[in-house]
Length: 602
Ligand SMILES: [Zn+2]
Ligand SMILES: [Zn+2]
Ligand SMILES: [Zn+2]
Image (cartoon, rainbow, N blue to C red; front, side, top):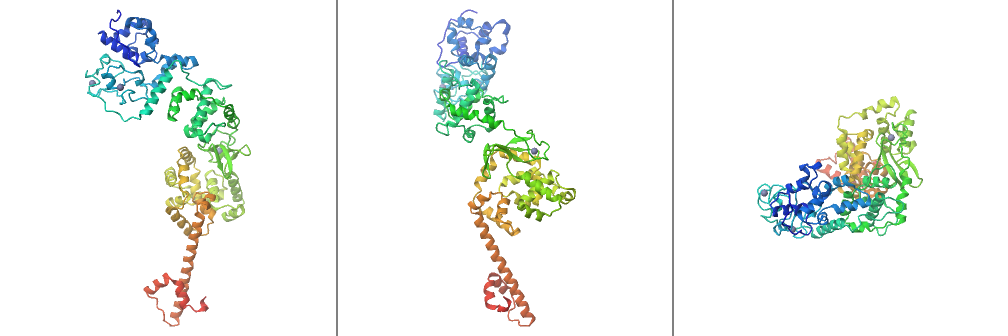
C-alpha cells in the first residue's frame, strides 16, 4: 500500500479511529485494509482491526511509524487522538501497566457501540474521542443526547465499520444524521463538568494524584486523601477522622476495608481509578481539588490511631456458644460504628450469629464487652431454675420485668440451657407450624410493638417469641435488616403518640393492667427514657384513670343491681329495671347511687 494522497484535516477532539475511517473514505481505501498493512505479522488477528484498541493503546498491535507515514501525519499527532496520554500518566505513577491499562479502560469507556451526535456528523466534525466515555451522554457542542443507533433503521452501530467514514449506517446505508436528534433537556452544567474533568485527566501536563502523605505510599495516600476530602464536604477543615460523617458518603464496608488497608492489615482493598472517579463524581468533587488536597498530619494520625482499635481482640463471650472465645461468627453491625447503648459508647459493635449476643468495644473502659447484660441475666435465670424457683420468685429476686424473664427463658429454651424437668414444661413454646422468618419479616415491617403484635397475630407467648427470636436464621435476618438501615429510620419516626400506638396502649393495658410503665415501654420496644420524653407515660396514666373510672362505675352498677334484687325480694318493687332505666343507670350510675342508695350499702 502506498501513501494516501488526500489528507483530511484532523478535527478538534476527534478520535484516531474516526480520523482513519474518514481518511480511508476520502482515498477510496478500506479501513480494515489500511490497518492490515500496519499490523505486524505476529498479530494479524482481524479482531484488533475492529476494536477500540486503536484509540486506547494503538502501538500495542500496530506499527505507528508506518501508519503515520502512510497517512502523512506525525506520530505525535496520531497519539494525541488517543487515550495514550492517560496510560503514560499512570505509568509515571507506577500504576496500570500495559495489560492492566487495557482491562481498566472498558470500565470507563463504551467499547462496543459507536456513540455519536447527529448534528456534529452533519457538520462533519468527526467522531469525538470523549463521546465513548460512559458517564458522558450528551454532545458538548449541541447539547443533544448522544445515540448509538441509526435513526432510520434503529440498528446499533458497531465501533468500526467501513461506512462510518462517510457517516452512514452499516445496515441501511442511510446517513446517520438523516433525522436529527431532539434538543435534550440535559443538566448542562453537569455535562460541561464531566467534559472538563476528562480533559483534565487526559492533559499530560496535569497531575493525576495528590503528593505523597508522609510515610505512606501512593495507594494509601489516595485512600486517605479520598476519606479526608469526603469529610471536608461535611465539615470545615477537619483535623480528626469522623466515621459518622464519612460514612454518609461512602459505603460502610468499603470504608472499613480502606481503613484496614491504610493501617497495613490484611485487606486487599485499594481504591481503583474508576472507583475514585465515581466517588468523586457522586460527591461533586473535582479531580483537580482532589489532586491538590493536602491532608493535615493530625488527620493522618487520627486514622493511623484506628489501628489500635481495629486490632481489638473480638470474640464471643457466651460460655455456651459453639464459637466461645472465637471471632468466627461475629458479624459487624453496620451504622453503629460508635454507638451509645444505655449511655455507654461502643465501637466495632458486632453480633455473634451462633448465639445472638451483641458485643462491642466499650469506649470508656477500652474493653471488649457484651453490649446488653443478657449473658448474666440468662445465667442467673437458668441457675434459679435449677433450684426450682418459680417464674414469680425469679422475677422478684432478680428484679426484672416479665419481658426480661421471658427473654431469658426463650433464650435458654433455644440454646438448650434448661434443666430437664423445666425443659419439658417449656417445650410447648418451641413448637410452631408457622414460617418463622416470614413472621419476623411481618413483625419488623410493623417495627413498633413487636412482642405485642407477635402475641396478637400468632398467639405467641413471650417465651415463645424469644425462642423464635433467637433462632440463628432470625438473627441473620435481623442482621440484614440492620444493614438496610430501615429499622433505625423507622424508630426515629414513631416517637410520637400516634393514634395506632394509643390504641395498642389501650389494648395492652386492658389485657394486663398490672403492668408498670417500664414494662409497657419494653413491650412497645421504646426506650424508657423516650417513653417519658415523648408523652407516652402521660398517656398511660390517662388510660389507667379512664379504666379506673370505668371499673368503679361497673362496680357501682353491680351494687345497684344487688340492691334492686334485695328490694325485689322484700317485694318493694319500686324500681323495676326496664331496659330504658338500665341504660340510664349504665350511663350514669353515680347519679343513681346518690339518689336511691341508703347509706347502709355504702
Ligand atoms: Zn454535536
Ligand atoms: Zn440504518
Ligand atoms: Zn457466640
